Length: 257
Image (cartoon, rainbow, N blue to C red; front, side):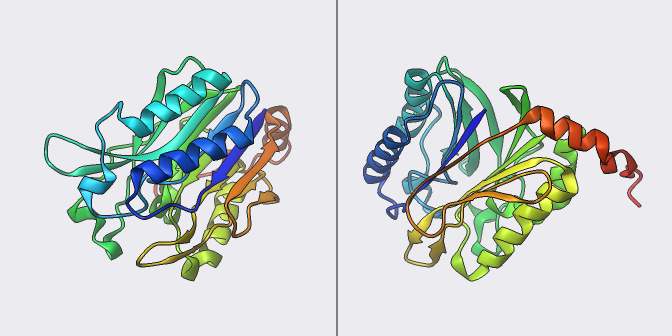
């Protein structure tokens, strides 16, 4: 089945501009029915600690765009949004909508980025979430989560075979981004898709490098540094055969050693 990553040059804290940009990119990508389409972390605002700029309530304009696109294209759309909860703090989330426009999953970033002060503004998530797509079990993660392999292995134990990372990952650590995406694929014998932003914010430059990686760590497509889309056809029977032929996951210990 077709997986599409939309790499956007996010306009800092400008929701209207970013929704228009995302809508145009989604239309240009013309996702076929049944496909899975990904957009970056906080695609409507950029990675900002300004909750007023970042957050909408569930069902806000960003989520309506995602749900409407999924419905019109008979596809599944997964993107990074920010919501504000009654406790006053935000939630940095990945939310997916299915071909009927209904919400499939809502995952909150497990590891707020302490280096940027994110825990002071955004609460941490409470666990792994998964959803079904085209025979795959998909587990979404958000940006800094990529540095914590134990969370990805927990998703694998829940049956995940497609791991997705939505990010605003800065250029100064781009080598880490590529290395860790490939590592998560190899160690978990899973497809991995990482969708990043490009361009710049007031604080960072972003080199993009959205990637789709196969279970052996081979990069199937690489977005480079420019706004645009990449795509690949994922083969679940081939993934299952690889796991049978080289059953490394069966040897993983669960006793903490």
